[in-house]
Amino acid sequence: DIQMTQSPSTLSASVGDRVTITCRASQSINTWLAWYQQKPGKAPKVLIYKASTLESGVPSRFSGSGSGTEFTLTISSLQPDDFATYYCQQYNSFSYTFGQGTKLEIK
Amino acid sequence: EVQLVESGGGLVQPGGSLRLSCAASGFIFSDHYMDWVRQAPGKGLEWVGLTKHKTASYSTEYAASVKGRFTISRDGSNNLLYLQMNSLKTEDTAVYYCGNWRAGRPYWGQGTLVTVSS
Image 1 (cartoon, rainbow over the protein chains, first blue to last red):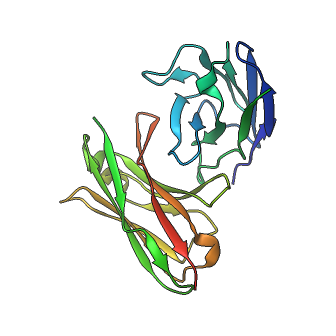
Image 2: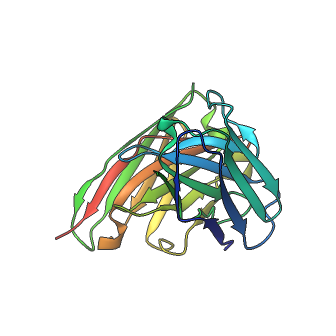
């Protein structure tokens, strides 16, 4: 199985900050990567798919980049609603593995 | 609009069985991969397994942690996805989400809680 290593595990930041979350795959996954945002008690919400395609309705401050084995999710200017846990998921090959998650906290 | 609605969760004893359902609408059910993902309390997301589309004969793939115990199937007449879970363990306690993949884009339901406890 492909392993997905997400970093950092926890990120403390302030409203207005630019933040970046990284996801590394143990082998190439081309651009078959999705990013999710999850808030407590809620289902994950799709933010980005195919590494860089912004899901409809997601604010443009979210962006994704990368291909092969290294990927990033960037939030250009943090808003209060963005404090949540973020996950990456590869869907290049089975099993469709997830990163361990990044909890974005208010500093 | 794609809609996925899970049902069938509940409390079951270790060693027991449970079948989850996912009612799908808003797309041609036979044309797309469907999968299950779970999340144990306070933990991250874990992919459970998948059934491919009709062209691939609805073949299935499973995570190692559930292979041989869980079975994914479809009822194409009623646009239902199933997850049959046998020999349940306490570590199978989780919210189970149904998912759909269309043109490389995932869609998720809201989940159903399964608790395995004596």
